[in-house]
Image (cartoon, rainbow, N blue to C red):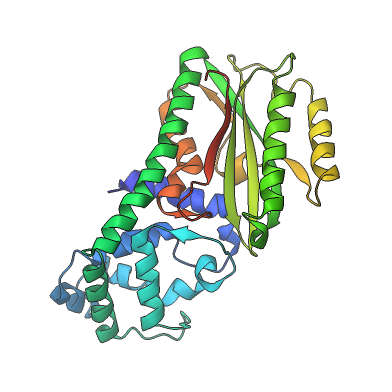
Length: 316
């Protein structure tokens, strides 16, 4: 079970990484997961009491239903998203009970809610759900392990680091196409080559994150981890000339543009410098890992496959 603090950070990561803050008010995958997890545990009597106004937490979970149609990943504004099996079934049942619902005008039907929860409770006891959950978590744990090993190696060898990232935004319909896979491989190889040439900057790792976005778009975000042992070291790259080469390679071999993103992971980070001497270091690392891999616990863009990948680690 995900902890409350982890879910809170995952919720923030969802709104930052996807740009869903610009969408109409809607329940996030975190809220849906929490609502589904709560509803499958309560009795029909408790649901009836909640609908009569005597159990606010359960009623709050039920009230996610009318707002689902506002969710960009539910109404088609954000596509190519695959969810934790519990979220998937909750949304499927909600769609059957409230097809095309609009939040302002919808009246919650107690019979529909009770039937839906009974169906959800039945589903999580099936072999299909157990198998789906096992496969979902197995891939997640492998990716999480790769991330943890990378950061353990970094922490063992340096006192601090900084993040810099580059991004390609593309149509979600092209995700997984031969063209995009070839471009992804080209960029990964080129960025490793350029950043590992003898130079003043010390590249510790290169990470890749796929981010579903509004308007059926996806971000391919390359995150470079630079060694910065002291707080007064210069920010960013000493020589930015490599980016001109990278940009020319990308844009001469595709119809896409790669940009240098100064948004601190879409506003998720207060700053991009991490120092082991900072008393908040562990908490900040926990938040960073939530952005990189924690969201994969609830949603992904390539079926079971993770949205996060370690492209390069200096200490491998």
